[in-house]
Length: 256
Ligand SMILES: [Zn+2]
Ligand SMILES: [Zn+2]
Image (tube, rainbow, N blue to C red; front, side, top):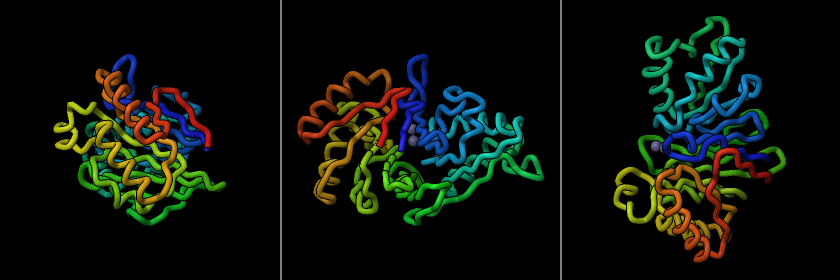
């Protein structure tokens, strides 16, 4: 299983892109930077998009890819909570901001939406996908993706602390987690449902206590202006845990 990071940050600029992951070229998780990262042909190869929650940095390219596929006669399957579906249908693909691609073209709508239930494995193409609630906003999910040959990735999406009830459901070889700000912004992180390096450390300690191992850990959703500070603090966390932790960047790829 190949995981490619199309975007790895929480804010966009010339040097940073919103979070967006691509599994084996066909399965996207979050849609922060799908269209500017992929050729029209590569966009048409996509089979499904999983959305973790409805914040703009995670759904931004849904309308952009929908219109590209519409003009090429393609379709895309999108999976998310009911909350994300309601947001996109009411506020983005609503006939005002952008066409109603959930209904157009009438014979075969471009966007086919499936509301996914947490803790209930869903077969998507050849993958088993498990949505697991995390603590960020209403109905935010992390996703565990298991390939046919048994390789497993878990992506937390945006999340605050208290992930023990989430860890109970997953068994990944690769954990893609968020760390948004350095430790000195812990108050902000706790108010907005995000992790700092120290908060991540607590969650990884609880993971290892519960599961008896630590997966490979890769981080996304860093604030680009604070990344050097985050990186220095993460190096100390990795040393404490005696485990490698890597900050992702646009274009990074990992093979399991
Ligand atoms: Zn968010
Ligand atoms: Zn976000």
